[in-house]
Image (cartoon, rainbow, N blue to C red; front, side):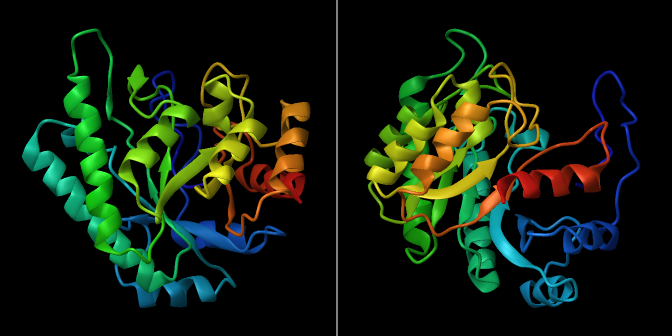
Length: 278
């Protein structure tokens, strides 16, 4: 919702940025929306969890989940969690542990782990042995930091890197099996699953069978990129099957509306997205 939606063709963006109160007002008037994803380190919101909860309560909202921001700074360009740059990896782990503590104070359902820059662009650019080793070790260290907090790992096959290590649900499950911790599971981003040419219902089942379905992010696309379109507008039959199998799971977490409306009315797009889910 926030941001001016700048892109390389329109560097100034399509909209003026929204202030925090404007954004929360839109959220509070969106029928069926009860919670918000909170970033760590906080950007628009206060640093203090108590102040965040107080602010959200003014709009009858609460924190659903927390995501750790580890992609917008150039220092993460070679990866935050798999990089061979020890100091960079150490800082990423420190920030994530702080985020776990932050999420616990907010009573968030889980914490999102998205290894955005952890991948490669060219042959011979990355050491795959080291990359996967550091990913596993990092997640083990993070999971052991507080076994009472769920960590949800999100897969994506490309963007910002041309190839990302955790690129599909199968690789995600391989990673989770090697990490071997009950509180480290998966985040199924429907758009990412579609872009990876998966059947999203099957991906639900794969994660659910292993009791690793920790987060659901709702958006979609034409299977060729990740524009975060309104969920329920393109892939009707796949989504119907997705919910058929979702209803067979014991998933008790949030369904996160993860969309971008660069040209369209942001409030109307959000309400449409929520309405199509309900």
